[in-house]
Amino acid sequence: MSQLLKLEIDSQLSNTTLVAMAVRGVCAMTTLSPVEINRLELCLVEIVNNAIEHAYENKAGYPVEICVDLDKTMMNIAVSDWGQSIPDEVIQDKAEVAVDPEYPETWLCSGRGLHIVNKLMDQVSYESDQGKNSFTMKKELRH
Image (tube, one colour):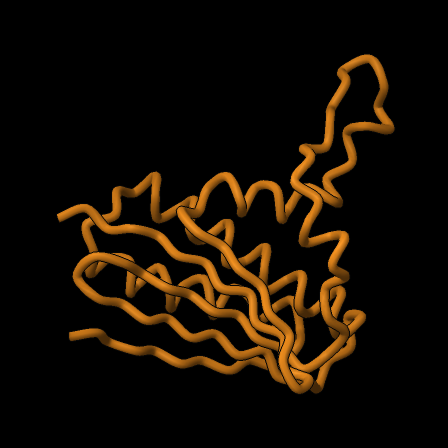
């Protein structure tokens, strides 16, 4: 039997804290370690922020939907928006952004989020269908 939590926030970066705390509470019901919970929260905030920043161009007044589906073996988190979709080349790009300590221009934080999410989550997928864009992340739970 699975449990489903559905949240909707307005497209403001300040609302990501609400989402993070709600999902952190759900994580407390699982076998995830504190480190795994921190990583999952990082991934969630990254994807919610991406929806606000890129899909809605940092404009308030638009919905961002977060669905958390929890069962005994897996936590599925889907973040959806109805804005600009992620370009295919961004989704397909698996190359890690290189950082060189000698060149400060490589230190930029931007552009690393999807790579981090891909490394920390067990499965990720993205689809855009009839104007709804959904980024889904899956984390396996220990028994």
